[in-house]
Length: 68
Image (cartoon, rainbow, N blue to C red; front, side, top):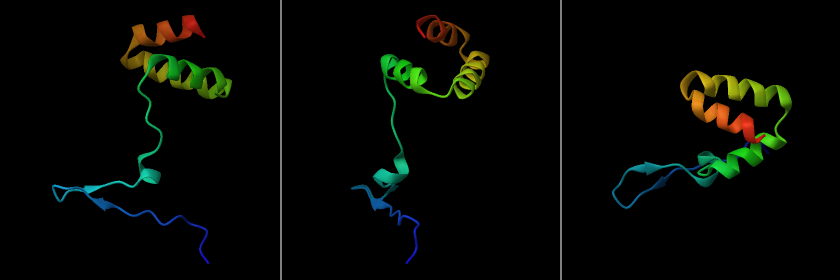
């Protein structure tokens, strides 16, 4: 028996293929939700993520750092 999950695509009403729930991952759509995730993240990962964000969205990265 394989230990890999069996991901299946589903057909949308328009016939286009959509991803299953497992393939979609976690959707983040809120500033406060991002802050909570960053607070619990490993410090090295958090700094790496903020550094990459600062290269594209410096004001957002600064705001997140202030609130952490």
